[in-house]
Image (cartoon, rainbow, N blue to C red):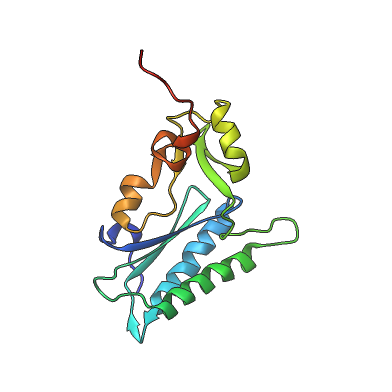
Length: 171
């Protein structure tokens, strides 16, 4: 059963899917509408799941489930993945394909917008100072609403990209 995202408990489990292009306003509205319909029928072994779907910054589709109410099962997680694949199919056209499963793009918040960078260019961009230590990146591996709120948006210096930052020495 659908629960508004902001009403989900801090312990709710989340899955963050990053798109390879921004959703249009119409696509975002449709993703939320279809997400509400999906979560209203989403179940694990016949037990309803209290869940939510939300889009952030036009790039991030977030699915949450309150596992204290009922835990998601392997089959129910598979059905959520099928839902995301359905959105990909619905929103892809010949000229504007969309993928929520392309893990080769890293998202950064720059110039008041999400910017994507191919992962194989990240090391060079950090070393060249194109991405600064205090720039914001997104940790899409967070597992709960609490982590999503507190650690999803993090400075590059606190992410795995920190290994590529120039090392400073104290004299």
